[in-house]
Amino acid sequence: EVQLEESGGGLVQPGGSLRLSCAASGLTVSSSYMNWVRQAPGKGLEGVSVIYRGDSTYYADSVKGRFTISRDNSKNTLHLQMNSLRAEDTAVYYCARRSQNAFDIWGQGTMVTVSS
Amino acid sequence: QSALTQPASVSGSPGQSITISCTGTSGDVGGYNFVSWYQQHPGKAPKLMIYDVSNRPPGVSHRFSGSKSGNTASLTISGLQAEDEADYHCSSYTGGSAPYVFGTGTKVTVL
Image (tube, rainbow over all chains, first blue to last red; front, side, top):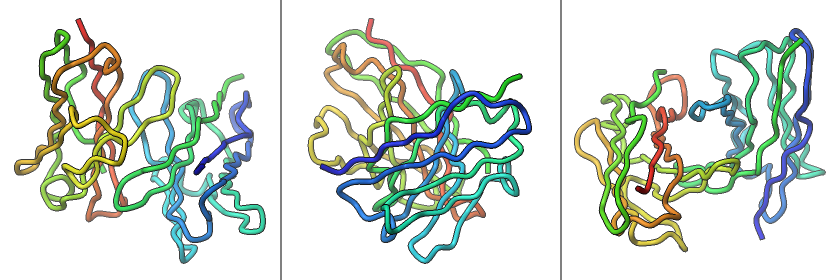
């Protein structure tokens, strides 16, 4: 069964850091177009970051310079390092695979709350 | 990149058909046949329902169908059922700096 499982969310103060992880099974992270998508409470979906097969990356303007996407091929895991966190980063963070121009596999999500 | 525009809510009675619109620009919805739709029940992850405008993944009910005209894509749910009550999100590939964009989301209520 193809599965993604996020971890690492929690409560953090403004200006703090968190590292999210997404463990994959049934698919190979290194050969997939992997994404982080977030959803603020009561809001729609927002693309945060992408890592392509060739290791090039994309970041939304709202997180550029603060977030870093990476993958550990030996552990088949995707990461999102989040620094200088702001209240507006509060959201459920999903990892998702993009295939054939659609997000076909999603994790269950991990909640990040930025508050003092 | 601005979010695609969806109605905030759509409702219908069991057995009826409803249509959700998703309006973008020639730089996203209108320029590419790469529109997808996602169903999201409360507290759950999104689920892919339609890709490439009108294709259904295996296991998705044929009551769900997609189409596109100009800069607007649409998702139609026919024979509405109680289990269809959920939020629905569209997404499109873009030719701009961002690789894709999502819609604002639509809450579907079964009366």
